[in-house]
Length: 177
Image 1 (cartoon, rainbow, N blue to C red):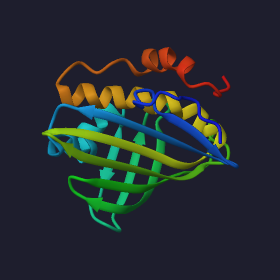
Image 2: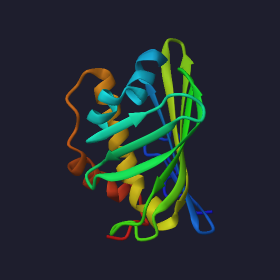
Image 3: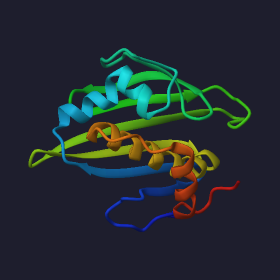
Image 4: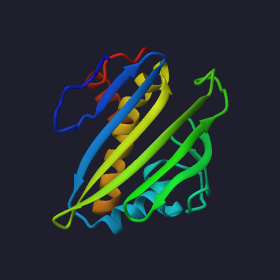
């Protein structure tokens, strides 16, 4: 198992490999109640802002569905909601049909967990079962999206994703340009 970041506070997250697959893992402590962070993760209008999405549809319930067109490449991801436990956990399939930058497509899983710690929220993001190449390429990208999410929850201007992604690439070795 290779780890791209050994930063124990996980500010930069972790990228690990297991065979043909990759796992991304991040934790952030946000000085806000879970309900506020949950809304930023599940309210389509808020998701559109931090995820740079043109389309967000969330059928918020176990067995519901997710359909987004998001990010700088406007990737369409669909999937079934596996866990819906407001305001604690939200997990879904992340299925992308083959396209130029993802020639094999993706069939992975995204899980968000929110823990209340003294009135603050510890946000955990795990994106697992990504192909190795996608995991390596997405590590800095998810980090940049989390920076945008934190800014949205905080009421600050959202950082420029491309600029932040470029700054973060050196912190996530293994990505092939």
